[in-house]
Length: 71
Image (cartoon, rainbow, N blue to C red; front, side, top):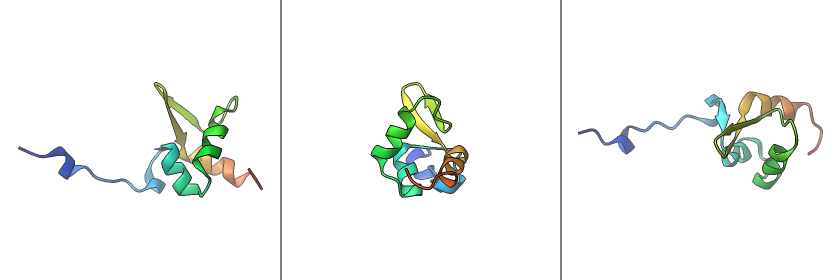
């Protein structure tokens, strides 16, 4: 019998399409609280909802960060 936990592969942040808030914070250096506040804004371009779970669309998040001088 194969143990699933032993076969689980970690994917690096920069290869994932969507990130958790925690991953996005580590990836960008922006605090989790600031990311959560950005996700609450109306028409946030990098919000991806899965049920009640908030995920960050990595490509759109990178574009957003590149277009800003401060947050």
